[in-house]
Image (cartoon, rainbow, N blue to C red; front, side):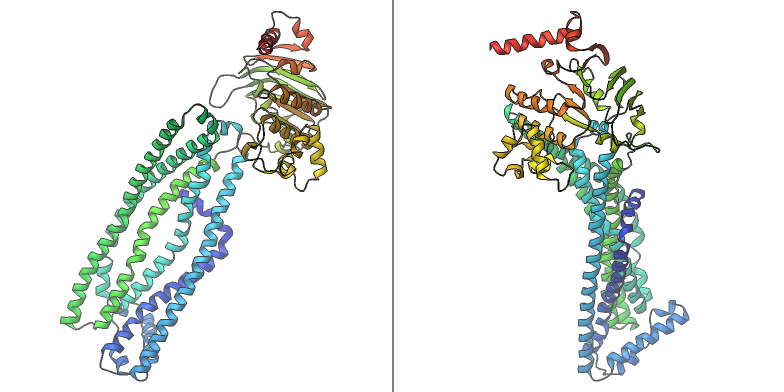
Length: 624
């Protein structure tokens, strides 16, 4: 229940719509009761011999108002008598016409108010779902890279889609079922009491039994709902991985393996949802059977009052039965309220697992904004390990980079090169030590302003299913096409873009799948050029390209490095020979520093060994 109350906080912005919905709900419930109550005078008119005012005299005795306060009893009696005087004045034909008109107007009003109530409630419901999705999505962007490193993509997608859909189905519970159904029960219960208090007592016998049964079923349902959402997340994860990796699946002929894996997840979901359906559907028929059981007893006992004791007229008894059986639908709806709340609470728990996660990378309370990079970047005794491991990836790293300097990071795979450059834009924070930008600890700089100073081009090229123009000008609205073309030319991308069907307006597909690897990389370089940052990071930017594409990309990279402070991670050491400084990292420790020629003089150094090994591999490729 605590989770559900937290979810209801999203309702606050829509309080006006809720008030209107509740008002219309009240009118709906009253007119719904009136539509049933009108059956009594209708039956009296159709089946009794007396005419006109005689009916009023016969109906002046009240059966149920004796239990009300004296002043309220008098007011109810006077209201009922006034209504009957109006209806039953005149001959039988006039009375019948009045009742028919009243029934027509009552149902018309009931349906109008029902429509208005449903519309305003739907506005609230859809608005709340929109706000929850937006908040979860925005919060995801605040979470550190370590969160995404440990979380499945499909699971995150499932929470924003499937879990929020479950919440959507229960938002209306508190403002529809918990308002309309109790009002309906009160109205029809009032009608029943006004006719016969004794008979009404029998109708509420079922409540203690149904409440205990409903509570028990609800607790089971919440557990099953939580497990069900997890299963749906597993299905989404498998689906996402298979679609994004479809090329590898086909290349290795693993279609049947993936099909079997997917069937395993869907079968598990199928069994889980059937179990949940069994539990969910137990509450409604159980409540209905108990209600019918009491109804049968009521019919037998009421029939005795009409046929033997003559303390109740047949029309009143039928009106009472109509009222009592009208209580069943709202009672059944209320019996599912707890179930729906439990289901939404289970989904809400998964949503709040994200929303309650405090970002570990965030602005310090006194963080400052830095608009430019002036002098240097210094790594000072930096050590780092991931949150899920105590093993240090970086160990006591210290070096200083002057503005405009090109620094290359070299080392074997897993040495810690990428982790090191990921610390600069604060994708992670050092476990120990600090990184200084112009003498300021980057943890004291606003993240937004820090990242505006940094451009990143990686081996894994991230493009979006939009036009080339929008991908180059990512995050920039109404940017001049001339500037975009200028950046594309500098990135050696303009020529191939012109040859595409729609030029710069060509949509390139998810992750730029319609382009080659070299073309995608040049688009990403054009994007970095347009951002024009003073600090650039190249992380294996040419590692997956053929020789021709690499030459074009390398030329674009060299343009991008001009007059910028640059960090380069390259698997091909020939591309970093002209770096101002080469830093060799082995097992998280700096083991060598210097220019290419100086490092090559050390025959026992790691750099020369790596360079010679790569040169021999390159020579073998040429021979082949």
